[in-house]
Length: 115
Length: 113
Image (cartoon, rainbow over all chains, first blue to last red; front, side, top):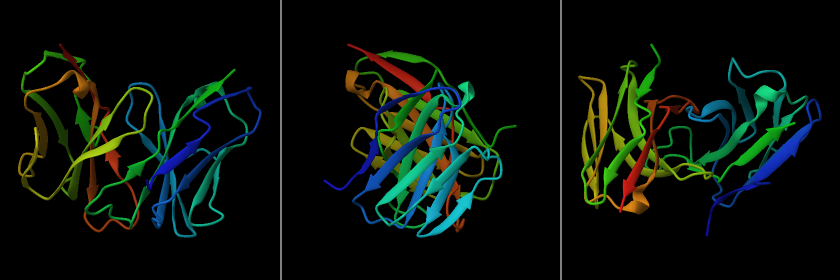
């Protein structure tokens, strides 16, 4: 089945130790998004790629970076994780920027713990 | 005022009850309205999608959008224990270039057998 796959499902990292989360999609969607979701809060958009064009949200900390080497893969790099970065990280895709007709397709998320 | 307001609950109902979930919003430019269901420790999955005002029905689920009141609703008929999840409303401006889908905080629903 076409889908959005995130690895790993659970990630534990040390304070300040760089960590990379990955996302792959078989939907051939143009747009890929990274959201941060903390407990009982709305998902918050960090950035997104429309094809190779990178779009950073104004309030996304510099500590967060992203790479999209090809259509299928997108990575979230956290350069120096702090305790406040512990959250569920959600990858999503959409056919185009409107999400028209089918909305966004989300992966199952990576739950990041910082110790 | 946040762009999208959603009562976080939790909401507990008996099996078979009609459930009403709601969101209000402040941005009159929103045109696309969605409801996502999120099971514990999973990503959100699209449940209902509506463009502009009106109603949309899919099985036991009905989505309503009232743009004049900036109010959207999701109704679940004959609720089942498998409906227990967090329901997130989400909305987006028409023609917004790429992103941003604005989410509510989600309402946690528990359907008791």
